[in-house]
Length: 152
Image 1 (tube, rainbow, N blue to C red):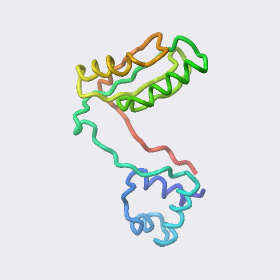
Image 2: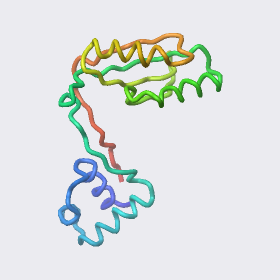
Image 3: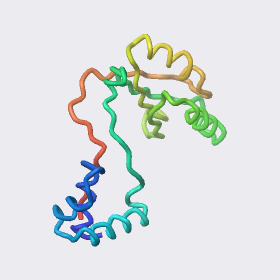
């Protein structure tokens, strides 16, 4: 990858719907050369796919929650059972195995506190191997991005 690839990636992270002709002009390539580079980045797996960014508030999802989960054991069976269960619940947006006091960090979006209570009762409480749960409600987001820094 070179600086032009980096520029292409930065542009596509900001707006993946940008026309190739406009992107090519912005990065100083012909449309066909730009298209070839995008295809190579896709083929190499650097670009994994494209998705729409949705305003969660417009879907009625007004609160974001982080949930730290500690498990009863670190055995492979307990870890696998927990991870398989997490995959079955669409209310869990993200799940990360972490270091520190918690074993996992989950991210959840909910309409309101009552909706989160339902998610807690019908989803989180059903996760296997959980010894403790710590919930943090996001009061205000200062910075949030889906863009990765591209340093080339």
